[in-house]
Amino acid sequence: MSLTSVIFDNTLRDWLLALGLALSINVVIGLLKWVIIHKVATISRDTSSALDDAVVYVARSTRQWLILGLTLFAGTRYLEMPDRVGTFFTVTATVAAFLQLGLWLNASMRFWLDRHQKRALAQDAASATSLAAVGFVGRMVLWSVVALLMLDNLGVDVTALVAGLGVGGIAVALALQNILGDLFASLSIVVDKPFVIGDFVVVDDMSGTIEHVGLKTTRVRSLSGEQIVIANSDLLKTRIRNYKRMYERRIVFKFGVLYQTTADQLEAIPGMVRELVDVTANTRFDRAHFFNFGDSSLDFEVVYWMTLPDFNASMDAQQAINLGLVRRFKTAGIEFAYPTRTLFIEGGAVPTASDEHESHQSG
Image 1 (spheres, helix red, strand yellow):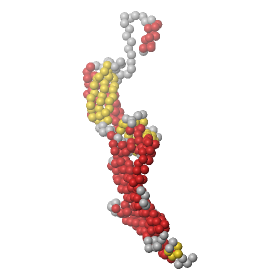
Image 2 (cartoon, helix red, strand yellow):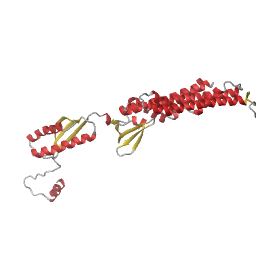
Image 3 (cartoon, helix red, strand yellow):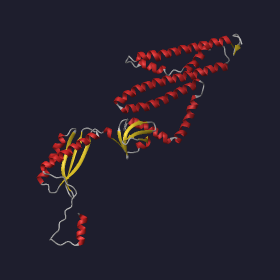
Image 4 (spheres, rainbow, N blue to C red):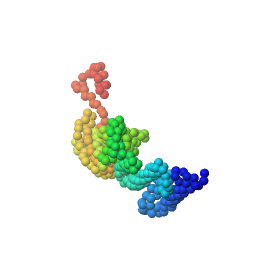
């Protein structure tokens, strides 16, 4: 076969020139991509601008095989070709162009989302959760638009396709209603923000820290270490206690003293408690009252607030108050109550065997 041989109405020489032109353009674009990725990336490390980083990020998504589809179309424009051959190159170039355009736009979107998500994680975990959902929805919309535009340029009746997809979508929605329920629950979590990543929550009898909010499930790391996976729709049907949103912690505790405690001593106890709470760090006194005559004790109830929501800090404060009460009561001659039962025998009567048995049981 010589260079003057005719293939599809063009000589072999013309085909080789067209192929050489297409490959040359492809190589030039490949070299430009290499320069951007390696040279511009090195320069971008020393600058604070996001534009050069974005250019590098987008350049990495360039696919040479898609560029080849475009350059082959460009290289064969001056050739005389049969309609079916020309249609093949046109369709190839159209598909390659829209796919590459979609990759560039998707890379731009991911760069923006990744940049803002890293910043949000350091400042507001709720924003990071929202951005993850926005990114998923944005990519779905992007590729849907790219696919419809590509099909429209290829001569497909998009209007009929959209109508058909609408009917099919209803059928799919009915079949996947549980999955779609979890998806919409995920969007509800993102919009309403009952919790975000890092919050400590209690759901029914489960408690732990939110690790990940996905499209179908939310993952919670429990106090004992295992990961709990809960469907988003189930999660929103239950009552959730979010302890991370707690600004102050209300503490209520009770104690009792012996019935032998005098009225003056009882009257002094609320003041002692208040002094101890006031000198304990991160606490605010609310009240202390002698509120009940118990079976074997005179009962007091104390309420104070922790100005920090941290549980460990509240336990440290309670320990300090308890130790202070023990020392104050010992100095004041007040004794804590403990379960006791006193048996009174009237008239000096001699107890029977059954009475003794009952007295032993009651004692």
